Picture 1 (cartoon, helix red, strand yellow):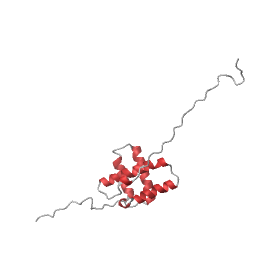
Picture 2: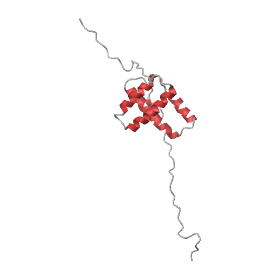
Picture 3: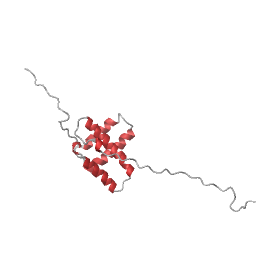
Picture 4: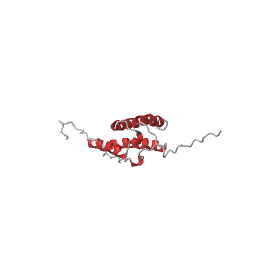
Length: 139
């Protein structure tokens, strides 16, 4: 009797579902082998904040509209321009990781990365000290 052949599932047509919080755990575990622990913690914090904003949806249901609502909401609340860079980078790396594994997720290249606003450096100025006593009149 011949056994039926099992066909491999096509990753592009097979939809995988995962809660966003579970996806963060898996992503952070994988990132620990690639980058410093401080980077993992930073990305983890940014992703959890986004997850909380969306109320832990299915990973595959997150859209560009969700990301833009999140970023626009923070901008409306007065968050500094430079604080968006790490949030956007974390989201990009996160969605790239899952897209490369065959999950049907948001295309990470659609997430904008704002240019860092450069602050004018503060320069220390030296004041010249007088070598004379204030009450002394030079001769």
